[in-house]
Image (cartoon, rainbow, N blue to C red):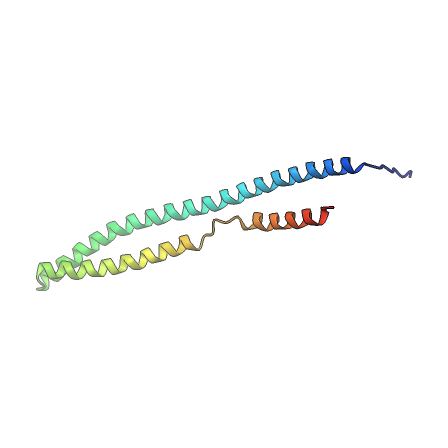
Length: 131
């Protein structure tokens, strides 16, 4: 099999390197977009689920609160005290649930980590190729 030898000038090599780096940057941008889209989708799903759950829990808490208040009143507790006790209990429970929901948002990082790592590798490669 004959060997093909092709000698290319430094200008040609740098031209090819520039094209390759341009393609690499475009691919990195596509990766970043895909990664950010995935993260945004997760945040949106978490937000929708949290909001829906909060609304349902709110309606349920209102009904249960009313029932407990009426039960306390029928047991002989004055109406204002019954409402105060139930209100404080629900406020504490709501605060705990709110803290849990906020923790879910904090645990979701919006930084495209794969892209950042890939860009670090690209920078290192570019430094090694630099004359």
